[in-house]
Amino acid sequence: MTNFLKTFAKATRLARKARPFAFAETIRRALVPARPAKPKRPRQSSASSMPRPSAGSFVNGEFKSRHGTLAYKLYTPVGSTRRRMPLVVMLHGCAQTAADFATGTDMNRLADELGFLVLYPQQSQSANLARCWNWHAPEHQLRGRGEPALIAGLTRHAIALALANPSRVYVAGLSAGAAAAAIMGAAYPDIFVAVGVHSGVALGQANSLASAMAAMRGKGTAKPAEKTRRPLPMIVFQGDRDRVVHPSNAAEFLAGLENSRPGPLVSQSFSGRSAKGRDFTRKVYKSSGGDVLLEVWTIHGSGHGWSGGHAAGSYTDPAGPEASREMLRFFLSRKRSTRLLRAAHPAA
Image (tube, rainbow, N blue to C red; front, side, top):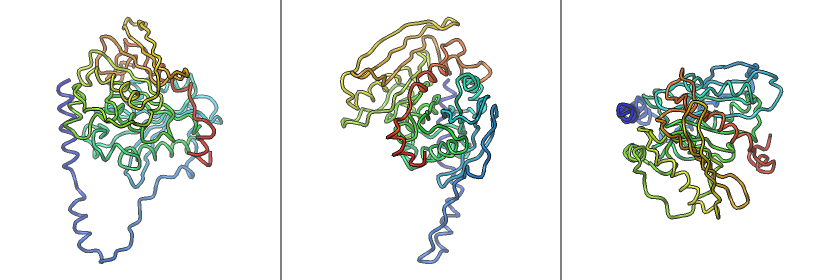
């Protein structure tokens, strides 16, 4: 796992140094008139001219906006496409692709069973050599900027393309994708209803490569003193033998919830064993009104891999309880209220 950390650090440094457009931009600024015309922004990909994907299809696409370009895969489950189905956005980890992540999480099989769409954005190697989402960099942590804006734009594109139900959109991820999913939930609560985190670092724990590496080793930054906005409902999975993302990171999601001052929390703890013999502890945190705000699963004996995932994918632990199924249970029990939906999506 040490090699994984070295690869992550090296890829991020190379991505920062790779600035092929810097020289050209300098020349352009020297040659343009003193009062140049405002440059046109790249046209955002439109779903209006594209046919709705057919049932049982797993299509490839490319989304472009002024924030960049993302390749993606979109799965439409078998059955009728006339329904406005929920949408789950899945953010892969470092060294993974959209197809690999789909295989490892087995989400498409569950989509056929439960009836939902799955969107898999794929990080570009030009943005990060190891295909890590750049969750540690400040320019990729806020609404309207960088990768969050790009992923949000792609999500809206997928909603329009597949005629998804905008009141039931969720985001989940593994490792770097898990950290990015937490950022997406905080930055775009008008799009997403709930968040799934697997082996990830909580929001606010890193603002540089050095602090990201420290957080992954369990040495995160100090908590902000001021009150923060209450996070979206979240389900968290973490292996207690993880040598890439220290298991202590799971506790930071509870700390983030408590820092939002949600009022008295009621907690319950459950123990169990998966069908393949992996023990786990599940802790549920509810508001005084009974709403589940956070669910944390600790998978005993598990390392850095998707719990209950398929062995054909990378970074999976097939022996663990099914993280994918449990996330879908958590997600599909929630939808945005009509009032909030109309405010965020007037055309919905």
